[in-house]
Length: 219
Ligand code: AMP
Image (tube, rainbow, N blue to C red):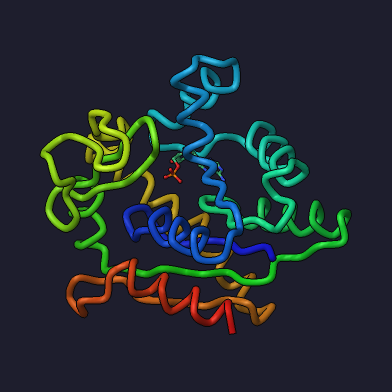
């Protein structure tokens, strides 16, 4: 099964994808995590991608599409995959359809998480991640048990570089609204879009949303 996680930054895509992955056994692939790993290891891909990521811009398709294709052809995707952060443009969505069609596959479900914009900004600014095991925390909503330390692996949690400046955060939200939102229409027209609101205002956080989705997938 091929599942896509859509939603602006800070809506909890990674958290929801992680819970769905645990509940269904389908592996999760976050393009942002793959880029960050490469940046940390200073690989040629990482050095190139960081020129865009640090500024809050999209990494060009010539780099991103082959990278995703490689994972789709790997063992990781043998039971399907949950893509978190790809596609982000209509061109990437169309390219993904082509790549999957060549392999006799298709996108089965697109999950779109929505959150009011003021909540998003607050959640991004208060987001922290474990650079080692990738667990995400929020210092207000879901802090680690010991301040600054990852519950799962004991590493020191950090703030992502592109989460720390308001300029980069706003730039990413603008890209989302102009480039990624049209992708939702593309999948809606195919009848495979499932939109879920994640908001502290309605007391519906990612965990509850993910649990509902896992339940439905297992039906
Ligand atoms: P994320 O962790 O999903 O917020 O991604 C972090 C950054 O990685 C984004 O702001 C982009 O610069 C880059 N990135 C991740 N996925 C893609 C993609 N599908 N296309 C282009 N750039 C991407």
